[in-house]
Length: 189
Image (cartoon, rainbow, N blue to C red; front, top):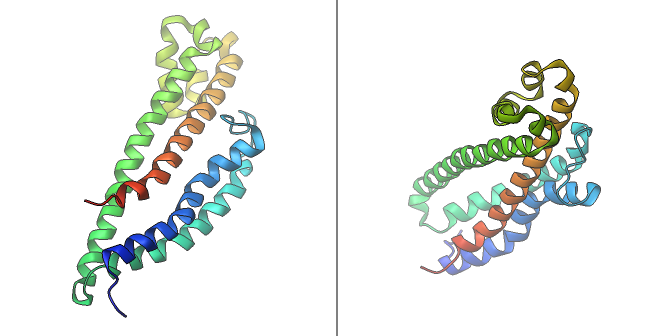
């Protein structure tokens, strides 16, 4: 096997870009096509509403990861393939960890803000942000337990809607970042 030049590796990466984009856009595209943009099927949808996009994501991972690893070790001489693989996998894991933390924090903020802005949040007054934080961190069960009984149903509905709204926003942003990542990585130095 010959070592590809950086130009050949860049061309390979661009060839894989549609697979990479499909892998990350599939969940948001599936949600938008089936339920309209910005709506993950509503608060009453079952987890099975996301099953088709989960299957496409799994196929995308299977199609993308082996060539990604091959490009990672293919741009260095064979005697440095282990080092390149280690560096590539390290950056992958760091990216996953940082991405989960960043998008998780954004999800928490979006859910909290969406709940506080809801009608149920308005009825809670100054406690809306506190209950919204409970929704984001612990789900609707704890939020419903912390409110007066007459507000339990509206708070439960607002909690579901806030989570779906926040998750839809974060998934869309994540897909955009993932689609633009390969372009940023291949910009000549």
